[in-house]
Image (spheres, rainbow, N blue to C red):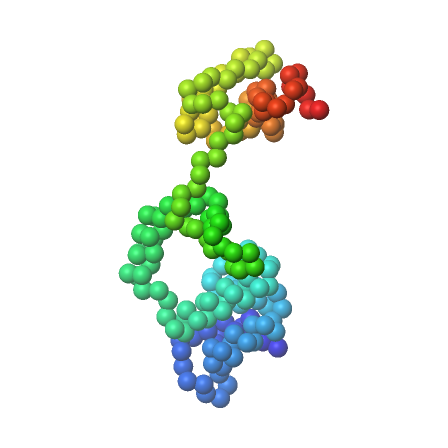
Length: 193
């Protein structure tokens, strides 16, 4: 069985297979037979820090990447800088791309990554510029609806639930807290059915 010492020791730059040494392929194959404890030790030796995960497959992938990077060479400094530039310039999605309607049943769906995500606005939320008020424990809560969120006491929040949490200190459904209902909801006392 491979040990963490043997894997870490053999993770040197690429070399010809000589008696007593392993090729990269053999080193990677040996990882599969190692215990989680051995993998964590190998990770600590290769990365210089303790592994935060005990997930065997994650450890194997990270160690295999480091072995290959040590043997074949890591990214150049220029490539690292370019990757950082691209990551800074990228418009990161908060949700997965929509599935194209043109994909046929039984085929792999086509993801449309070029179409912008639709603005999802709940019909219960008033239009920007409106003010929501509620009395809570004798204090009047005033929230202004903005295009980029909800403003309460000079702070912008992403949701009514976040505002309700800031006010009460506990989780609330923001629409229930402010008494906003769908037009088809006939209850007016603010309690669930």
